[in-house]
Image 1 (cartoon, rainbow, N blue to C red):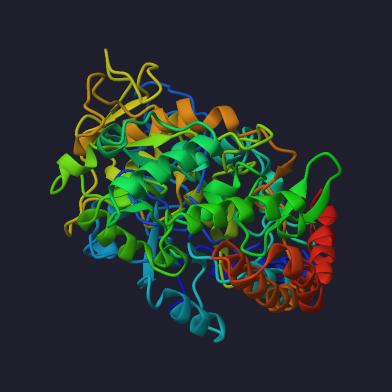
Image 2 (cartoon, rainbow, N blue to C red):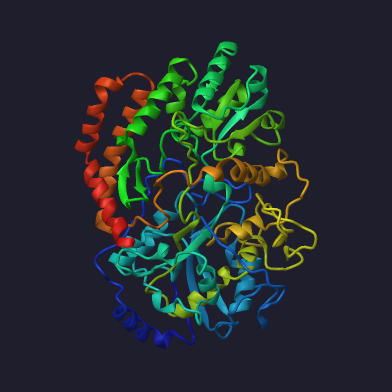
Amino acid sequence: MKRKSVLTVAASAVLAASLMLSGCGNDDGNAGDSSTPENSSQESTGGEESSSGEESTGGEESTGGDESAGGDEGGSAGGDTASTYPIVEPGSLELDIFMLSMPNVEDFATNDFTKYMEDLTGIHMNFYTGTRDDADQKLTMLLNSDDYPDILMIDPGIPKYGVKEGIIIPIDEYLNEDVMPNYMKMMSQFDINVTRETDGKIYSLANINDCFHCKYARKMWVNTRLLADIGCEVPTTTEEFKDVCQKFVDKYPDGVAIAGADTGWFVRMQDWILGSYTFIPSSTNKLALDKTTNKVVNVAATDEYKEGLKYINELYQIGAIDDSAFTQTSEDMKRLVNTTDVLFFPAGTISDIIDSVSANELYREYAAIAPLAGPDGTRNAWTQPNYGVSAGGAMITDNCPDVEAALRWLDFFYSETGDLCSQYGAEEGVDWVLNPEGKVGLNDEPAFCEILNTYSGEAQNHDWQDVCVRVAPEAYRLGWAVDADVDPYSPDGLEKLLFDASKELYEPYGSSSNIINFASGQIKFTDEESTDSSTLATEVTKIITETSAAFMRGEKNFDTDWDKFLSDMESAGASQLIEMYQTAYDRSN
């Protein structure tokens, strides 16, 4: 990669020396808890986003008028930013950036938003990209050479390349209102410690994608036509649920009462059902936090988990659950739902399973149902503290000739209209409008904005769509203008359908349990700890997954085989894994 700056090359040696003094080369690193069964990276948001972040995050933004980002030279958008532009003398600084490429963006080098950013900031960007299939490999190869980019919008592993090796540099000294006014304003609504690593330093800017319906994504859907046909109301308890399934099996012997899958976005039927007995966390190793004691617990080793498995076995014994539910993919389940009478199926969004256009009649037959009350009244909705905020949005490497300029360039994305400009284009009145008169958002509040240039599935060269850092707080996402009278079962009504189901049916049960998911960024391991914990988690998860399925199918006996299940988890390293998670939790809290 060619070197870039007319004005700053002479300062590179001084900058490099200062970076050495700032502690880039510490020996320990960190890694987040990646053992998630819900394939949360496959966030579905109604067709306007790629699969990015379980689910990505946000907060509340101001809605200041139509002010330019930087006065006369600020371009057509930028909103209520405190930054001044240009950042450098135009033509004086080039930076290299690595980011994801998508088929619907033709060429970043000639893209309209790229030109807008260069005109606004004075900084010319050279783009290095990779697809979803090869980006990680390409970036790793670059980082293992001496010729890697200045800015990374894909996280290659901060514990290794940041904390341990110092290629990704700490940015704490730049996180202030002088350099990063928009970022600091945005993060004042969140816990910035989410981005702090095991050595106490911050190496990345946050991704913020606070999708409300994704916070309560573990949903179950019921076919209301079939439910009426068997003369039943929507069940609200586990006993009612079992009774409904029995009646369905009796009348539809060739149908499927409860579908499910092993891979996909919140498609595991057992996790939804078990919520009537205990909280089931995201991690496949079933580790969670007891918020009353701040201790890490193994949910799979509890009596409540055992009772939940017994109940699912009862459903299996009456023929309500097909064996395929334990092994098939979400695509397999999709084919099943679209070709067979299926009473219940789990999914983060109905649109992943039934197409709202080609199968709209079937689509309209399904409605979300609330979590069931268990025998003792337990009723849990899956959710996660600090949901939607994560580290790894953007990082700076030690090759960067002007760290402050690079961060100021990134700061634009955290301004009031930064996300709008990158996603949909930078021309207000053509690509979007702020505070559209008479319009309301999903939350029935006055709309923050109206998108005019909507997401494109086809190749275009006007904006970056969804491949860069996301800055989409909840108020921003819920503040997009919608038709107040939109039909929730129309293709345009999906976000309304998911919001209403989440708000009315799931949010009331989102804080019912003392056992909770770890908050975003709460479990971070050093590079070495990450390797060790991953090895242990693989073995523990294998035992939990296989043995739980055997109990649910009746292949193991609860009276004679449960104690061996507990001892097998211990032999695989469950206690050591809990200890490692406890150490990581205590370190960050």
